[in-house]
Amino acid sequence: MIAHIRTAVIAVVAFTLALGLAYPLLSVAGSQLISPNGSDGSQITRDGEVVGSRLIGQSFAGELQYFQSRPSQSHYSANATFFSNYGPNGEDTKESFDASVAKYLKREGEYTPGLTAGDIPPSAVMTSASGIDPHIDPDDARIQANRVAEIRGLDLDRVLDLIDEYTDGRALGILGDPGVNVLELNLALDREEN
Image (cartoon, rainbow, N blue to C red; front, side, top):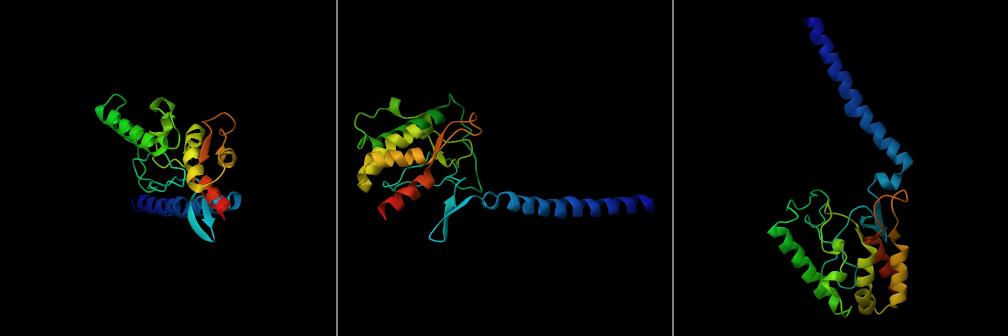
């Protein structure tokens, strides 16, 4: 009996050291060697201060001189990501979608005459699965470009060029859809004015 207890204690200590200490330390050290910025959360700095992450979206609501991120159930809180559990045919889903469409048309309609609900890319008014998607659809960005260019007093063609510059392609050339990184694009706009 004592031999079994001793073996069990040794196994617990050995596995705790190996899997609870050594493995995590090696994983962190390896990721720091392979991709230092990625392992630190792909943080973006401006003037030496961290302003966000390339991988986590953030809200620019109410700041009309900036491109707006897509709606978020979690209000872009990276420590509490989730999506709506509303079913696709539920009344709550329809109300949420209709409210997002109305808000989008109100914000962009003044700067894009003739804009209708049918012109809005679906992702512009729907939350992402994680609630913290840092990208918007390139078509959404092109609609928003009219507002941003006018408010900032920038040439629309220059804003469209920046959209193209900050559009990420498909992963591995085939996975997902192209997306515009909102934070990086907004920071580039700030640099244009300086």
